[in-house]
Length: 200
Length: 166
Image (cartoon, rainbow over all chains, first blue to last red; front, side, top):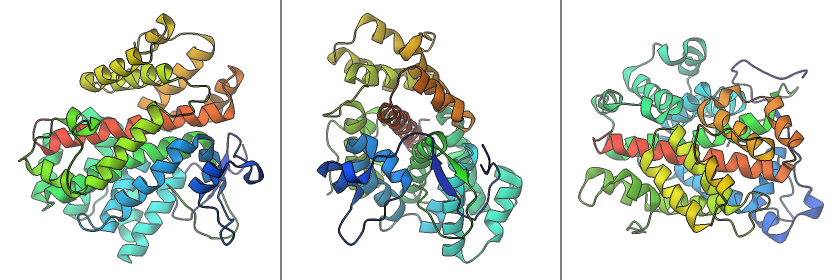
């Protein structure tokens, strides 16, 4: 297919579904509630309209997503985004990687960490705390059994608390979920403008 | 919220016990734990299962747990599979050696790839589901089931490592 992106980027692409999104005009009250459609908010992405095909899961997943990525305390938001990026690289979800790499850059006001990760993957030469976080997210994403006590020790040696490590486990695992939706149900395609998207 | 539900699947499977540091961390995120259980129930036992029955969902979940070398979680889903009164054919789905044919074969092919090598899922894999008669809404239900399992099995593995018995 033309225009499908295969390389990592921080420019958020468009997402072209491989299955039919629901039509808003025919949406059930339950779907409208899950989509949070109101008279003042009628803009819903194709991705969310695709997920509305399974409204019971969508309804409970959205608040879970927000709690894991934005909940107070624990791991910093930028480091949760790093966990999301680690998973998205392993699963080659170009769309999710773009959204969460650009959020990481916005939060840290630094583009060099993501640039190194996109260039060298898990072997990127970055500061040890970030490297330990990336390493753990990558290994847990490849296969749950691949993350081992040594990876956990590395997180602790880098100064992460139990609460912070739990938040990292949650964000990396959550993107095992998000990547399997975004990457399998549609294609990332180049867009003309540089608007943001919702990689979740 | 401050307590964890006694029948919470992730807490039970990771064997995190009161008094452990990992338990305190989970209690601090009790809302996330409860929402995780709600997504388990929505993916496995939805009120409207569409074209993917509760028994098929539980059998696929048990298969995914086995593909990820989590015997305890596989047993949990096998229990759900029996509760849903699975047919002999549907019970076969739980065995990773069984590949099936037709519609069931297509559900299994997508599941095996999405569970173990999601980066390799391409347009032709979604097309194969459509060719086997799986409708668009059921493809989304199947993807959500797989995606939820990928999250749950990693959360459990991570928690086991956190409490030092990975």
